[in-house]
Length: 207
Image 1 (cartoon, rainbow, N blue to C red):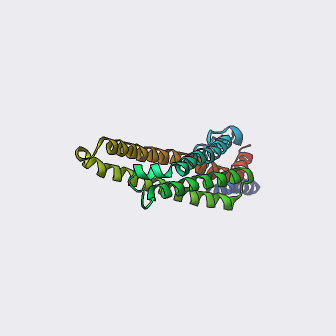
Image 2 (cartoon, helix red, strand yellow; image 1 turned 135 degrees about the horizontal axis):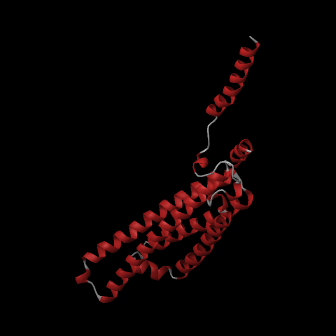
Image 3 (cartoon, one colour; image 1 turned 45 degrees about the vertical axis):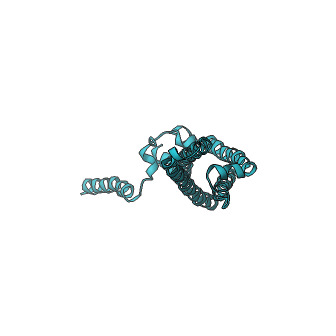
């Protein structure tokens, strides 16, 4: 009887941690995080902090340069897109670049302070900026394509401006692609950053 009781106790003690391990939900990060290894060296995503700062400063720098060019050459920019009266393209491009600069400054604040609310605000602002960039790129390319339908009827100077407008739209679309890639990098970094406590607890259990 004593042997049977001790055997039942050992079986129950073995089964208890299994049931608790089933009940706990494992974070998504453990799909790439190797169990038992350290947080700082487990994968490339965990070491993206310098890359996040580089993305933030690049957004501020590139956005400031392009915004200065648009402000100083706003009339020529609208003439190129045939919006000199409404100044739509210069205003839309300036607003988009201002959003890029603001998102970059906000990302610097998030990277230095690690404020969760500021990060959520950055994600919202960055999403709106990216959608604005895509919409502006399609608007530029669409207007340029309409102008190319009348290519035999227009003069050489107008044809050159139409080419420049199309190139501007293509570069805006390329900028939207690069901005989306940087957004994915930042989102991935902070997604894994905020499950750090769960990762450290998991490593403690493995040890």
